[in-house]
Image (cartoon, rainbow, N blue to C red; front, side, top):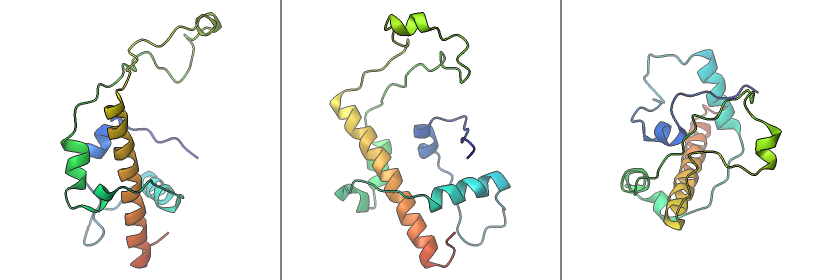
Length: 134
């Protein structure tokens, strides 16, 4: 399985206004996009139900009308851990730019995460019902 690479953070990706058109589109997905979509739609997803998910304004309430949550500084992170030393790990040094969340912020992120999983399940169910399942 190939890792997914995006320039945007997961939160920024959910806030984008672009979407996938199910019918009538002349644009074809690239092979990588098709593989990613297939991986997403065939995966097993579960979510914690919340009454707000069924509301017509759920996306706006969960992503636009919430307090801003500070993004951690991830400039220190490099997939190849060439600058990582065991000495730093043993000394218990924390990564710079760590962000501690309040209980309210944790709740917002939890709801956003579960809402995204809910939407994936609904989309998958809709595609399967239309015979476009994978």
